[in-house]
Length: 266
Image: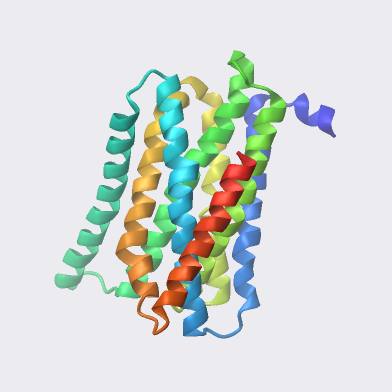
């Protein structure tokens, strides 16, 4: 089995590896089926948990690697991360304003819950694109003989990202359930946020050199989008609960779990 995998071409290896990372996302999203009824306190807690997961992912999975990659590529880290973060935040800010304008003109009927769901899905999806690219680059680097590039290190990266995706699947599906979506729809959109990883993985393996140059920007871009959603939507909504201090504690739990997975799995 191992020999069979090693003999595949690099884009196919990247595809298989990122299908695994998507499958773990779907596994995390399946947690939504454990909840038959929507309890406001539980769902607010999960919203706070999602915020913690996203804050930790923004730094440990996105900004920190972006800084490291920028240094290795002889780019200026603070410029790369600043540009990427601001563009990511501006994208969701602009989308928010477009919703408001369409609402005022009565061309599109929406509400706060719908916007919150959409922004959450978009931010996690944007986060998964550079992760998929990172796995693709790891396998594509084997072809170019880049220093430190081995098939074991590429597989470990895919394993680490896959395990990190488990709480991310939860972070999407449970808040969507809290906003009134059915369990099936919440699961569907939860796993859908990870389906971009196999696509990005193949692209990263094929265009490894260009992807390496763009990856720091994409990582910071995703971080900016995620932090915007956390500050604008998730934390304020979770704090509408009467037990604000407990909801804040769940945010810290989400952050801690994601931080442990990121740091421990490298």
